[in-house]
Image 1 (cartoon, rainbow, N blue to C red):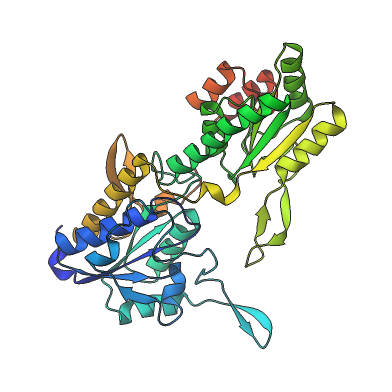
Image 2 (tube, helix red, strand yellow; image 1 turned 60 degrees about the vertical axis):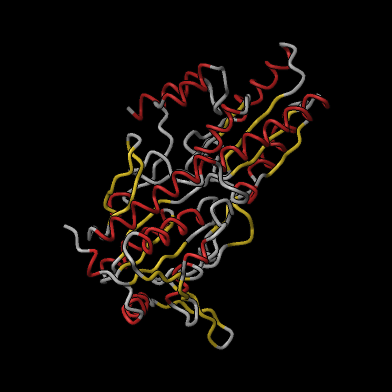
Amino acid sequence: MNNHSSIQRIGVLTGGGDCPGLNAVIRAVVKTAINKYGWEVFGIEDGFEGLIQPGKVRPLGLRDVWGILDRGGTILGTTNRANPFSYEVEVDGEIKVFDVSDDVVRHAQVLSLDAIVVIGGDGSLRITQELIAKGLRAVGVPKTIDNDLQCTEITFGFDTALNTAMDALDRLHTTAESHHRAIILEVMGREAGWIALEAGIAGDADVILIPEVPYRLDAIIEKLETRHRSGAKYSILIVAEGAHEAGKPPVYQQHREVGGVKRLGGVGELLAEEIREHSDIELRVTVLGHLQRGGSPTAFDRLLATRFGVMVTDLVAQGHLGQMVALQGGRIVAVPIAEAVAKQKLVSLSSDVVKTALGLGVCLGDTPQAIAALQAQEA
């Protein structure tokens, strides 16, 4: 089905947390829409906020995307605080929550947008699917540094975040060795431990803690003390922010996000305190935080984001709305957004990446026997 002749105007927005490669997608969408199809393109600012508040939609021409391929962040702005189905508004000094989803769909229609390209992660694409059910004409591009979206082998932004974490580990090795101490690096990863796991292997970490494997303090201390007895002068630990001790919940900050969502953070310091209480090991903690989101995208992310941007525009031209572009077997394919957000892509304990870590003797937070039991349960 090829009905691009009926398309005249499309919109594009970036939602959720920022990540390297967003501008590469925007650039590819704008250039393909204008050069290949002769469409008008409108940028929707600050995620779905741009379809809720007035004055946040602007034309995007070729000049607007000159020189943005290598830039981190997004020229359109983004937010994870503008869920149209649960939109917070201050009324007489009090925060009230409204469902403004119908207004979003109506605003898109008033703007005569024949389709909207939503570049987002799990949350933004879930919202998109709900809006599609209400009549919004949209397609999706998978974006998240956490790499936790189903149906695609990898999301753009992950490779850059992974390299940032690996570079941090490389730097921590030298200072840890100089001072003969253990250092903990806390990285992002709310429910999926892809960054911690892959950066930990690439960055030669001795202990890798991920949300998928509840850790046991005695197993971690045993690993560190065994290294010390064998003559190792230092140790490196990497922990995902969503990692947690067996039988205990994840560690949350006191401050909450808008909407009352708990904010993770602090597991690195908590782990360091617990290890100090039960051993003589000297530890320091580094929290990488938003450094993982910033900076120029790697060549891999620039290429993947650009491929996604071109192909998602082609999906609109072909009338394949409600679809998301994905990387499968080295090819860009289309999958239903509903399928992509059905569940999160977590680390499989039977994966070759986990087996690689175990083969190297890395401690994943518990004994090899306990990990094997978890693998058996998963199978």
